[in-house]
Amino acid sequence: MVNSPHGGVLKDLIARDEPISAQLREEASTLPDITLTDRQLCDLELITNGGFSPLEGFLNEKDYVNVVENLRLADGTLFPIPINLDLSRETIESLKIAPGSRLALRDPRDDQALAIITVEDIYTPDRGKEAVNVFGADDPAHPAVAYLRNQVREFYVGGKVQAIQAPTHFDYVALRYTPAELRAHFKKVAWRKVVAFQTRNPMHRAHRELTVRAARQRQANVLIHPVVGLTKPGDVDHYTRVRVYEAIMKKYPNGLGHLALLPLAMRMAGPREAVWHSIIRKNFGATHFIVGRDHAGPGKNSQGKDFYGPYDAQDLVIKYHDELQIEMVPFQQMTYLPSTDEYQPVDEVPKGVQTLDISGTELRKRLRTGAPIPDWFSYEEVVKVLRESYPPRNKQGFVLFLTGLHNSGKDTIARALQTTLHQQGGRSVSLLLGETVRQELSSELGFSADDRHKNVQRIAYVAAELTRAGAAVVAAPIAPHERSRQAAKQTVLQNGGPGGNFFLIHVATPLEHCEKTDRKGVYARARAGEIKGFTGVDDPYETPDNADLTFDITKHTIPEIVHSIILLLETNALV
Image: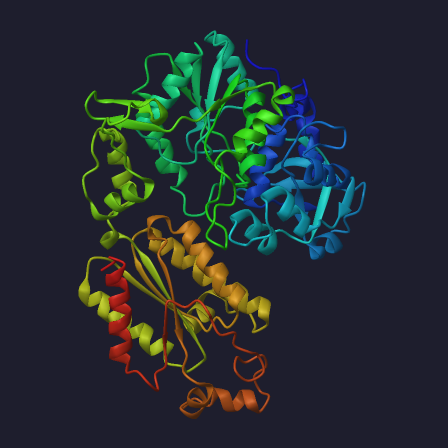
C-alpha cells in the first residue's frame, strides 16, 4: 500500500476546487493580477496539486518564522523549507494589497489565472536569519542565498489559495504526474513498496545499478523522480536530461521502474532539502527515499569548503524518521569492477581488486573534447543524447561582454573582434553595441540606474538566446553598474545552455582620454548640463574587480587587444 500523505490528508486543491473553478476564473478576471516568477510558479503547482501537503497556500508570518527557526509550521507539523510569495513595495502599494485582499496569480508564460490567494498578512522577512538557518550561511556563493539577496522582493505575502487550474505544460506531458495520479498508478499496477530516486543530473550505469539494487534488497519497485523545475545554475537542461532518463529506463528490468517528472524549484539546502524531498516523495506515494552523500548540496562556499558535511542530510532525515514515515535508503557509492564487468558498492569491494570510475569533471571534459566515453560507464543511447546537446567546445557559443566609458574604444574593439571571428569561421557572429541596442530595443528607456539596468538585461537576454544556438556574441554596452554586469552574466550562464560561456572585458581607458578624443562632443554636452545621468560626468562608473581581461587603448593597440582576446578564447578551447 502506498504511503499516506504528510499530515494525513493529500491537499489536492485542484480536485477540491474543481466544482467552483469556473466561478473562480470569472472572479480572477476582476481582481488585481500578480504575475508569478519562475520559482513561484513551481511552488504554486506543488501547492495546488498536493505535492507540498499539508500546505494550502504561501506561508503567513507565523508559519514562516516557525519554519525558519524550528523546521515546523506553527501547528507543529514538520516542514523545513519556507514557501513564500514575495512581492515588491511598488506592487503592494500600486495594487493596494492588504489583509483580506484577493489576488489572481497568473502564469508568466501564458498569462492564465492559476489560482486566487486571499491575503492573510504582509510581512518583512529577516533575510539574514533565513539565509543562516535554512541554507547554513549568509554566503552569496550559495545560489539560493544569492537569489534571496538579489532577486527576492522586499515583502512576503501569506495566505491560502484556491485553485483555478494547473499550469499548462507542452513538454513531456505523459511523464508529468500529480501526486493523486501517481498514487493511482501505483495502485493500478499493485506496487506496495516504492523506492524514490531524486536527481537533477543525467543518469549513467552506476545510477541504474544503485537503484535496481536498492529496490531488489527491499522487494520494491523504483520511481525515478527527477526535478524538471529550477535546479542549480549551470546544470544540464531538463530537456536533455529527460531524453537521457527515457533512454536509461529501457535498461531496467521489465516492470521494475517508472519515470515521473517533478516540477520542483530546488533550493540546494542540503540537510533541510533532504527532509523536504522526503516529504514531497511521501506525498507522491513513495515508501522509501534514496538520500545521497551531500544530498542537494550546492558545492563550495566562499572559503572553498563544502557548505554541508557529506552525511549531514542523511543524519537529519534519520533524526525526523518517526515523523516523516518514509524509509531512508542511504546512497551507496558504486564503482566498476572490470574483472567481473559489474558495479559494486565501494565499501564491498575486496582489497586489491581493480576498480574504474569517471568523475563528473572527467565526463564533462570528454564531452567537451569529443573523447570516447566507455560503455562500462554509460550506455550508448545516453552518450548519444549528451553529445547532441553538448557539442565540443569549439562548436559552443560564447559571449564577450565589453564594458567601459563612452568613447573608451570598446565599440572599435567589438567591431574588430566581429571581423576577426568572421574570418575564422565555424559559427555565426553577432554584434550588440550599446547605442545600437538602445535605439532598436530600448528607445523608450532613459539613463536612470533602473533604465540602464533594463537595457543591459535586454542585451544579456538576446546574447543568451544567440549563444545557446552556438553563436559568438560580442556585446559592448557601457554597463556602468556592477549589479547589472553580474545579472547579465547570470542570465547567460543560466539560459545560454552549452553556450553559457561568458567573458567580461573591461576597457579601462581613462576618462580624460575618452573626453579629449570625443569628436562628437557628447562629454561637452554632459558637462554643460544638456545630458543628465551621463556616465563619468554625473553618474559614476563602478570599476569591475573580476574582469577576465582589462585593457587601456592608451597603452595597447586595437590589434594587440583583439589578439589577446582571441588567445583567451583559445585557452578555453572555444576557437
